[in-house]
Length: 224
Image (cartoon, rainbow, N blue to C red; front, side):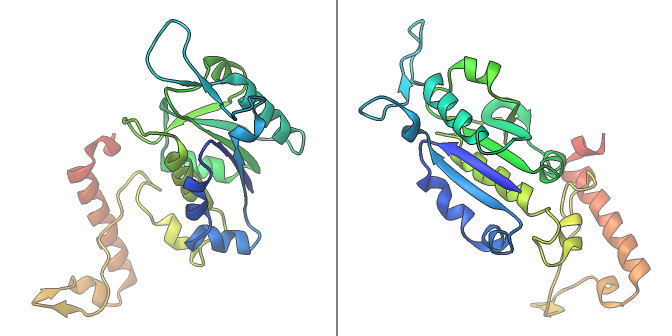
């Protein structure tokens, strides 16, 4: 898979893409990242990529020209399955979304910034709009890093134990059950006996029961 990220602040994402699981995925040749500074695609001598909005609203808006030039440049090298725009009013990004995107080959993520982007970008250049939550960030860089992380970690081979990713919260619309490790007792706080029993069927039943209980208690909306 290849993920190209278009941003005015590439340094804000670079660190997140080059450590931990994402770095190992690149080292294994399972994913490639491309970071593209939108300012490299403007004809403005001051490298500006934003301007005031028509109609007099407050804030600055990313211009269509540099975005279009960047996307056209990228598309001249390969075909893209999705061109994603990070925006608070997009569809909610979920584990299901991450699973779907992980099956694709080439993605572009355009990071929103300032007041937003010229709406013609969204009308004519973007194929999917994604939000990581009902709140507003300074820019879409952190959202893009989160999307990349969630997508890459479920690609087969990225995580050594693939079952670990499959048992994460939200994979089956349930929160993950509690997990414990050694020591089995600490300050009188004991690990549930069933996890020490070695009885695989009982452990599986306990985990499913706990997942249902936690989901019903903490995220009842998922039970629907």
